[in-house]
Length: 87
Image 1: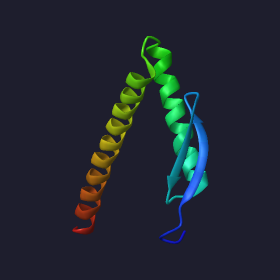
Image 2 (image 1 turned 180 degrees about the horizontal axis):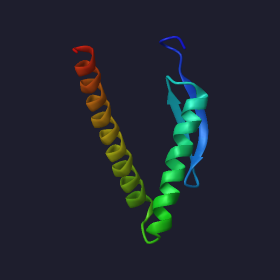
Image 3 (image 1 turned 30 degrees about the vertical axis):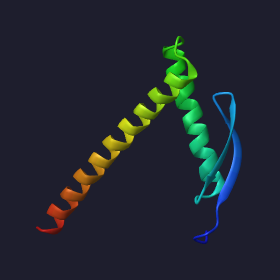
């Protein structure tokens, strides 16, 4: 995709319609939206008293936690690869 090209989708997340614009493909944007929707529904199933605002924040906290753990694992794997190359 060219640098100035943007993809745009209209999708529903947790029953509300959103327009999402990004530099990734529309398939990727749909995957992101679907993943957020699934995570919100999963969290809501265990915490039915949460309003949508609190649910959205809790979903963001969970997603950030997952991202940070993956980044930590990535750095760990990079260190292991560097050690193996140094042998």
